Length: 447
Image 1: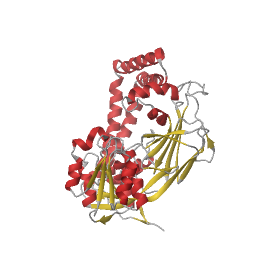
Image 2: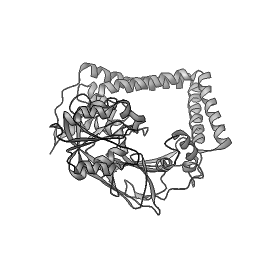
Image 3: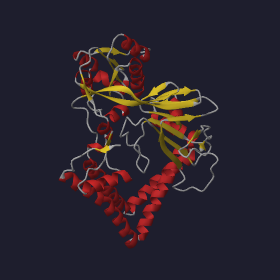
Image 4: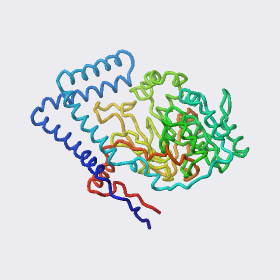
């Protein structure tokens, strides 16, 4: 049996924001309907122009040479036509109303929408680290650690600092620090480095601290850390709380965010990727998802237990991402579900698909979750593991490691119930209706 957590009703300001958010898409729909009846030609021109821009952009991404140049020109001309026909005003009105929905909904939903995990897994106080060790990658995040003088700041808090030098083996350094008596092991760097140090902390049964000095720091964000206040994250060693979170594992390798197979994994393998990301994507996409692209031989069982192959992308995450209806990732609301999030997509314009072009034929998408997952292949598989390029021998066996990591987080200041914009999903709309009616937006359950 589970009992509902008792929550206070929303404040009047949040109720008003929820009403505004709910009214915005209704007004957008009403505006579109009005245009449809009063100026049907304008609405049709807008729809057609949008379709032309979308298809032209797709050809620009997946073709080369003259066809790519032509597609870019067509996309620009179609976008220009929207402006010249005065349709940009209608489009801006619709976008403005959707922006009002997102922002007002962000305030109305409040912090619990971005951090349901923290309601589900209470923290417990942790004393200062007796022998805290922080490993620092000075090059990560465009030398963030160097710019913030992170090593000196950490040393001033009584934390032993190990700064990586070229050629150093991070896993070996972390293992040596743990074996040497560290009771809290931290990493200042990107997500790939975080995964290595987190795995070491798990093996030695000690706590781990994440210092977000990398480029994107997705793991830190989903933990609730303020990525803009790197120095404050050091307080995890001196004035922290502790929670347990899950980790993911594939063929013995731990990941904190996700493992990507297919298009992304192939792109990051390119030697020029780190120095020229956009150029590398532009050069490789036609080969990976264009009409001459070879079908992937990755084989796995989907949510309906059927066997699938030919997918252009397979993404396995440590806890499911929250996706909007548009397929946009919105972070992981919880980090303690004990399940993997799985997203698989097949680009329908790839080889072997010669159907008529339409706006709905670009991709087939599957999304589900489970505690383990297996992918088979006839050859070694490129994998992007927390952004790092690897080649793994199939079968790839993914599993969730529930509650494996004891993570130390600052008690004050940086643990924020991260707000996010509202999205047009059943969950958000239901929550907004509940808030507008004076009820808590999200009903979480306690064990």
